[in-house]
Length: 312
Image 1 (cartoon, rainbow, N blue to C red):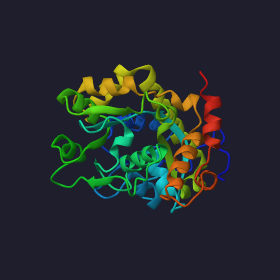
Image 2: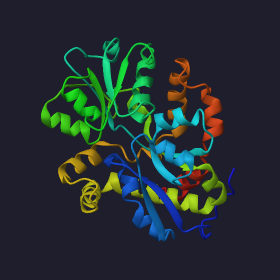
Image 3: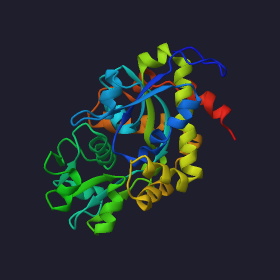
C-alpha cells in the first residue's frame, strides 16, 4: 500500500495525465483543473480517448495517471489486469435504458438486439450486469451490435436497427427531445441501480505507489469539483460550456442537476464493486470473486482521509 500522505507534504510530481472523453457526466474531472493547479500540479494534460480503447485501457496501460471511469468497466478490466486501482466513487446515475415498442422491461430483451458503443465498454458491461440481475445470460440471451464509423450506437437504435440502447448523458436528453423510444430503466432513480456508483476515480497502480502525496492531492481536486457540481450546478454548467465540453447550457445544466454528485460523501464504493462483480461472476464474464477483486484492485485509505478532511 502506498505511504500515508501528510496534509502539508509537497507532491512528488507536478505532472498529471487525465483521460478526456466526450462525457459531460464526467464534469468533476473536466472542472478539476483549477483545484489541481491549487494543489501544485503545473503540468496537467488530457489524453484523448481513441476508438477501440476504453478509459480503463488507458489507465491500466499507464497512458494516464488518474481518471473517472465507469464502475462496471473497471470491474471487467480489473478481473484480468492488475495495474490500476479504484480510489473513490463519485456519483450514481448517468445511464438510461431505452427500448422500442417490443421492450417494456429488462426481461423483454431476451432474443432482442441491443446496440452498444463497444464490447467490453461501460454500456455493454452495465447492461450485462442488469441482465444477470434478472436471471438472464448476457452472452447467450441478447445479441449485441456495436457502433462503427458510419453510425453511432444511438443512431442504430433511432433507425430501428436495434431494439434497445443504454444511453448516457447527453444521449438521454437528445432521445427525449426527439421523442424516440421509451425509458425502461433510469439508473439515477430506479433501484437497485440508483444505490450504486456509476463512476469511480481510478488510478494507475504504479503512479499511486510512487506518488502517494500527489495521488491524494489529485483525488481531493476531483472530489472538490464534484461538490461544485452538486452545490452550484449553474456555475458548473457555464464552465462546461465555456471550456467547449458541451455547447448547450440547458443540456449541461439538466445533467448536472439530475446526477447525485454528493454521493461520494454518502455511500462507499466497495458496495458497488461487490454488487457488479457478483453479477458478472455469476454469468462467467469475470473469473475473480467479488472479495478477491476488491482486495486486489482497490485502495480506500485516500478516500477515508479526505472524507474526514472535507467534512464541511
